[in-house]
Amino acid sequence: MKPFERAGDGGVSAGIERDEALLLQNLASQLTALLREGDGMDPAIVRLLPDAYPEDPAASAEFRRFTAGGLVERKIANADTLMVTLSDSIETGVLRLDPQQAGAWLRSLTDIRLTLASRLGIESDDQAPSSDAILQDLYDWLGFLQNSLVEAVDVSNG
Amino acid sequence: MADTIEQTRVRERAAADAPWVTIVLNDPVNLMSYVAYVFRSYFGHPPAEAERLMLQVHLTGRAVVATGPREEMERHVEAMHDFGLWATLEKADA
Image (cartoon, rainbow over all chains, first blue to last red; front, top):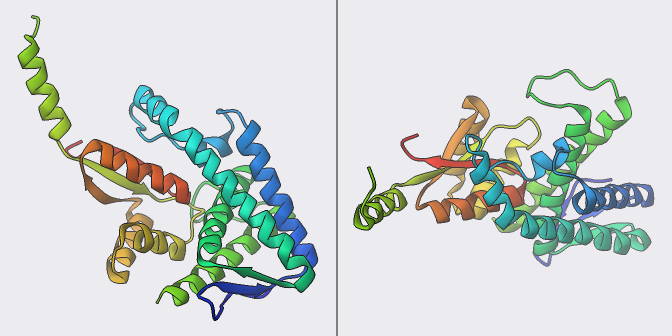
């Protein structure tokens, strides 16, 4: 996959291989399954929907009661945007995102990276790479992808 | 000793008026570029201010990114969770 570039219409685009598109679709569908079925004790879910009041479990539960449904719905919609735009990219080899789709991508890549980091046990800034080299490579690649998208979106806005 | 209804109301009003803060905490996952982007795009901060807050989160572990009524701070925290940032709220003097 090539870094994202600013497109003429205010959006962004990037060249993408079919295998990369399928891999990203797989990750997005795993995220959706986790959001739909994951239980509240799963560390990945805890990170995706963190306590708003760390010192006050009752207030955190209340906050979650009012916000978790909408947050999960929006996170699933963002993952859906990933799936749909990737499907469109498979024939052309080019992934095109309008500004709204780019926003959904930035959020969903974050959710996927948070979930992977939780599985990899990444808990601090200066931690050694995981012994799971494949998952670690995937995590690093998603970071590259997201950084390139942030930079392309910034150029579009500026 | 039991409060009168009026005393309770006065105290509730005072509690409701006390400012709260939205705090963004450092995490090892979110990219510095993305955190600065969130502060610009959501709070509308100029690039230099977004960069300063992002670095404060990164270097000290946390930054106060907004101050105001509790309900407003809860909306900000929900928005930060939507972006995947680790955010909490607390009373301003806590």
